[in-house]
Length: 240
Ligand code: ADP
Ligand code: MG
Image (tube, rainbow, N blue to C red; front, side):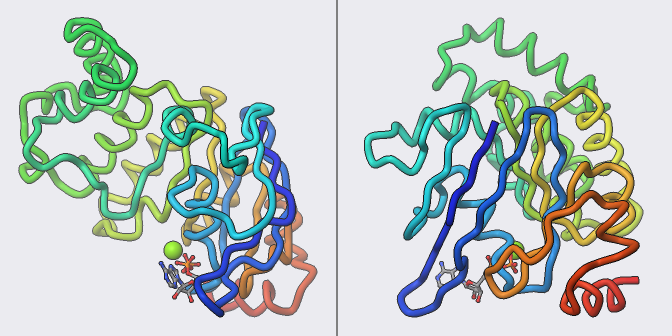
């Protein structure tokens, strides 16, 4: 469903991504791990054109998103994103956070959008917070709203950039549970995470980035028990 070929990204002279190639199949859950500064966020952001790749090609559902003629807005409709710091609209209620894009971008009626939003809030266990404002929610609740908001656009894939890194430890689990449920529904997901237990349990494949290179691309059973590179071995030793 996603094909990435020789993806490069530089900021001036700094080469952040040095030629990454891989594919992501429909329904696959990919964990992206690696040291801080290795290019994980940049990689993810290139997949929905929050960053413009310097070189290389990305196809999503047979559409070459790196082609300059591609409608970036359309790409972003199909590629949801969940950020470390939630990025909810602070002046909108939870319900309005979920209905805004479906109404303005997809043309759903207010009623349709609200019905869909309520069903998604129910799914993430937050229906009773529909009328609340984001600043009245815990971090874990905010992130579950952000996931529901991404789902409201009915995307083909959702990208998660360290979705639990800003949360207090007791809230990590509730967010991972929602993500695990989502994975079981067959959603295609690419997740930058430091939660090794989650990656082991839920991911179909682990991508290990180091200094802008994809140095390992393997199922968790292989990656966690027999990492091929010294860099991955060292990284895992520090994490465990
Ligand atoms: P990670 O998510 O793995 O920690 P990032 O993708 O955020 O890594 O960053 C990789 C490298 O690119 C870092 O050296 C970072 O400082 C640099 N970088 C990221 N975004 C920018 C930017 N907008 N301008 C310049 N340098 C950037
Ligand atoms: Mg990052």
